[in-house]
Length: 257
Image (tube, rainbow, N blue to C red):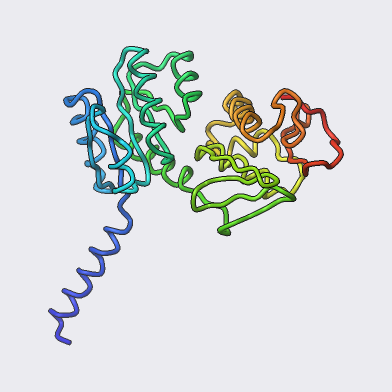
């Protein structure tokens, strides 16, 4: 092969590798001008393929077709419109969703996370910081447990559809719920500390935001426990962390968060 041919082959290989490294983002927006500014910020890094869609269009079919690593949501600024947009997009997909908004009071952020959103980023934000946070979120929210199916006692997790089966009873989990339960299953009944769960599921920078953990433990209990107010499966070690107890096994810890 000639030198020119080798160069062309290397260029093609580099282009393919670069394409494989690019992260596909799907952005749903309420305001086209604000969306354009966000796309310009993200495009500056050259690391993303970005598809945009107004919130007025159906979300589910586009997500199913594109299978993005991350769904970005730039909702209306008014509180009712923001919550409606969060609930609509979450109902349409199980992909990780990140809200970007200029409004970020604590109550609004908490309600947004309770609606099933995986992360909330406050605008304005610098281009490099935004790219770094998107990359970190894509890595963390795209994390998978090592095998296609992992189990602890009667609890079985399936990666392909992020579902859990507890003694023959199936529940569909959000990405954060799935990662949180995966951490507990991997511990095989041993206690996982609050800080370890926060770091593995949300990231090390969130270890002091323990209310997220308590909130999602409650979500898991509501989906998995026969009586969420009398937890028998996801047990609390007071002041330390959480652990799983095999169904019908004796409880060794206090059972309330």
